[in-house]
Length: 334
Image (tube, rainbow, N blue to C red; front, side):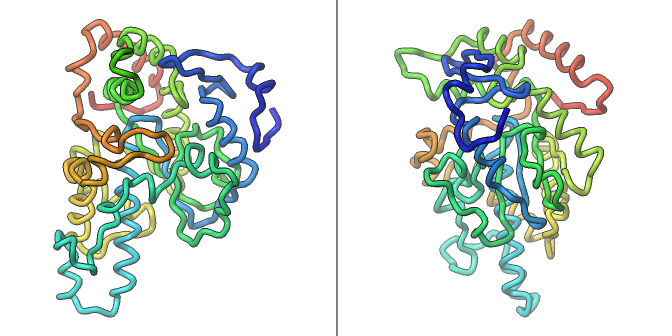
């Protein structure tokens, strides 16, 4: 199909369609999209040129995207602060950790805006704008996010030295998080979407930017082929060892921490408990999709699926997971 900044109705009419939470999704090149996501993807592929120092975050939906955005943005910010104070003495640098947020030296932009304001999703925010933004005019290093599968990315992202950071999560918690999230779009009169229907859709690969397993395997395989290009993170590992994983993340991004207090500061600033209790996230509204900022923060607990899925659902998803990931070397903590 020809690349274009517009995805016309006649093009959509040629694609398979499924209803997801009563939202029409279209299958293109093996993955499922909303119509405006497809239009934005075509514009992205036509107009985006990656730079060698770009950092692109990638994820399926509901796998820790907001957390990863906050972490990577804070890592870049920490590096910028470190560069500005390179001539300062060690005693001054030691004051970087957990200081009063009213101190202008330690102003935290996360207090003022949701992480999505600072790390925008290419096919949801950047390339849905009209007119399209001049991304070429943005200063380096540019930090973006995408939910797109690897095969749908612009060629320049794949061929330049830009970095890709991918986060995945075990499928059971992903499904349950997705169910809670999309239920926020439903009215009280509608009530929650039937869990059994949501499960069947997910199990059959129908979800935004799904199939889930195809999505994660594309990036997993790329991370094995080019570990210096693609970093594959697991949500569960970040929860288990945030200090170690964030150190690894910063080093991969080419912005290693100067000392351990910086790492602790970033982990603290980006913790779920802190972010969900910031005023902007308790009361703000996402201007792109119209959802409350609070919708992007729930429990964040590994294994929370046990409070929602039946034993039968759990066993069936285990079987699907084993079948899909067999031979890949990829495993998830559940």
